[in-house]
Every structure is written in C-alpha cells, then in structure tokens.
Length: 162
Image (cartoon, rainbow, N blue to C red; front, side):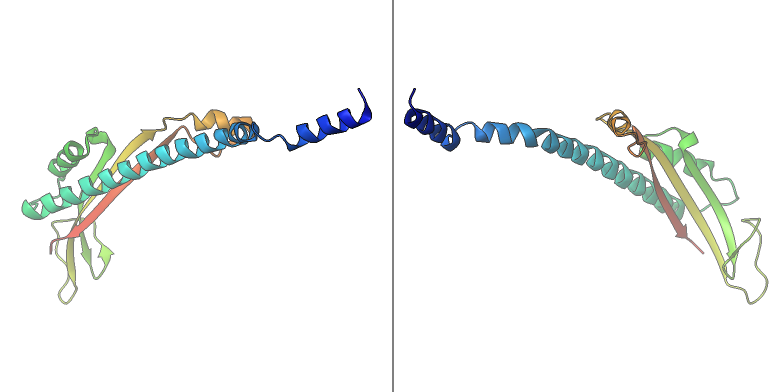
C-alpha cells in the first residue's frame, strides 16, 4: 500500500459516522431507563399520598356527619381503614378538646368561662409503598443508603366541629 492509499483510508474512516447514533444511544439509554423507573416510583408514592389524604379527609367529613358523643374514635378508625384499604392498626383517630388553643386531657370536659372552646377530630393514615425498582441495590453500588426500597406515606386531616 502506498502512503496516499493509507491516508485516503484513514480520512474515510474518520469521516464515517453511520454507527455514531447507535453508540450514543447505548451510552445514554441506561440513564434514560433509570430516570423512567424513578418517575414511575415517584408517581406511585405521590398517588399513595393523595389516596391517604383523601381517605383521611373523607373520614373527618364522616366525623362531621356523625358527631361523637364520647371520646371513643374507634368508629372513625374503622371508617378510615376501610376508605384507605389498610389495616386499622395503620390508622390513628382521636377526638380532642382545646381551650384557648391549649389541648385538654378530656374531650367531654368543658372550658372555663370566657375561654374559646374547640372540639376537633383528627385522623392519620399510614401506608407503606414498596418501590418497583430495587433502589437499595443501586445505592449500595455507590456505597450509600440514600435510596430506600420502600417509603411510608401518611395522610392527615383535622376538622373542628365546635
């Protein structure tokens, strides 16, 4: 081969770009797939959070419709668990009394004359959302424990009815 033929071959190889798109795609595709998996998991967490908030709000609306006669909030706990699709152990429901903004020990008690009375119903619902992608394994690759494999979301609602 002469020197001119070698230089022409070298110029042709350097100017060739037919396979560059495939190489670029192979470099960026893992990052795009990780971003897509992250969006799916974050969306699932956000939806679960909205579901818990709505279930808690429906339950406090139920408390307004069926006003309590004593401090027992078990019927609210059952209602919230049914609305959220969780066990009753994942629900905290309570009634409480405030006098001038200070929480009192007894819901059925009375505030002193001249104090502002407030009776409240509070509902808190927890649900654990398991991630579809194993983020924990990914974070251990980078010697980190930042990315969990599950997230606990909470929905809260408080309503004043007096």
